[in-house]
Length: 262
Image (cartoon, rainbow, N blue to C red; front, top):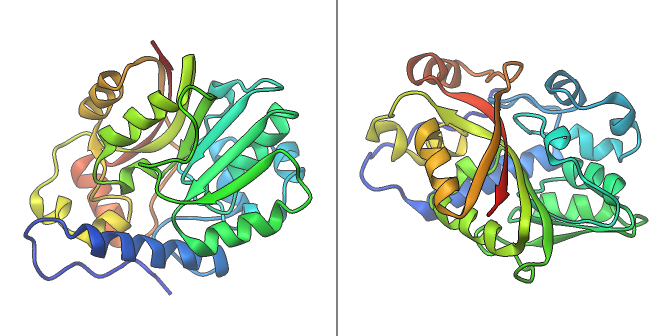
């Protein structure tokens, strides 16, 4: 069954409450029923195709990888070191957090996610792993001290947030001077019309909220970052007909990016 949400009837301003409800509903399903059909791929086959090393995936909980719904690989860009502190924005069931925890041990990884089913699953899987913890909350308001983080990571989540500038600003505030931002996310080549950008169903499908690439870069830089690397994730693809149509029409695509706090 294709779980791509139906379009909203009214265009009008984006209903952010409706948007959050739709996003939570989709990713609750990803957590609890990862093998059903979504508009995007999930699971280990996707992770491996995007570039995640098999030996790393073998060392983290299989159930976390089952619910992996990322859009690209960025851990090589992050270049995490033992003892570092990492903040994972939109950590889901924990694939990226668990991998980061292996790299930074005895350092700490903090995952933030607003979907209770995802947090519950990640916490259950983390019960015997001492250097990763998961906190329920919004990525615009991560519960970490300013200047306490060495690297902020995120995979396919920032496009779901209406105020992306705020996300990058709080990421910069959480980072120490010289800290890194290593992410994968969805951007567009062309500006999308209000029929797309004001449709909560298309936001929840990781399309409506995607920024134009140039504006995305500009927003990151305005938050106080210097961008060092941007690369396309050509292996990522949407599955549903509606998502594929938007990809072709507006150049919706995935990128991975490394930036450093000034």
